[in-house]
Length: 303
Image (tube, rainbow, N blue to C red; front, side, top):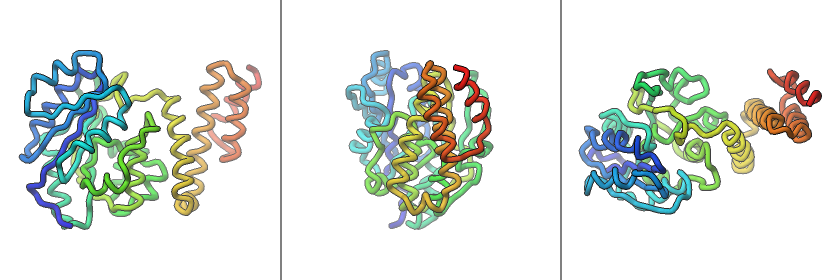
């Protein structure tokens, strides 16, 4: 399978009560230098002025409305409605740089069918519009390694990436079955792990996406919810990929220990010392020596 540089690309934008941000995202999608684009916006039951703002774009965009079901369901609905050979995702509070789609389509075209998805570097932008940190400066992200090819074990080890950074051939999304609607946080990480298990990944070494961090953003889920989702994902991936987990055993055990220790801390904050003790002991079964375990244990004993 080869990539046509004139292939239709569908950009899917899920939104929920992001009227104050969505026009920035839409304008960045409409300002792409790549000419053959359709934009599908899935409004996930917004109660603010989102729909009024979307109506100003007329037939430049395709708007779908549904009852509130979460980001995963909204993205999956967008995939169902997409006409493009390639699919990209954009959170309603983030934005693309003008050459994002063109650079990624060209990357896959140059690979001549050997790669069906790719990702790029990104930059975080603060509330004042100032760049704060590039993705390749964060050690917990795959971008730090600028990895490409078979990245499955790195992905499974916890090297994070968000859905904004990818361009997928639609066959990749069809194979993995879209986003897991049971996950409210880290659903994009889960999808890329499942894709990496089957398909080699290409990399475009340029900053092509801006991530705007703020309270309430899709990428700003609460820490407790994040650790709960990570707990679910660790067990899901252990069931799905037992041989791969065996290859990264020490890393996986550390990840599990971190999750249980942090959940113990949250339980203690809520006043449930008994639950906190159980969670901390489980954490220590995965990794007996951890930074922070002794102080947390003392707090639990004194509670």
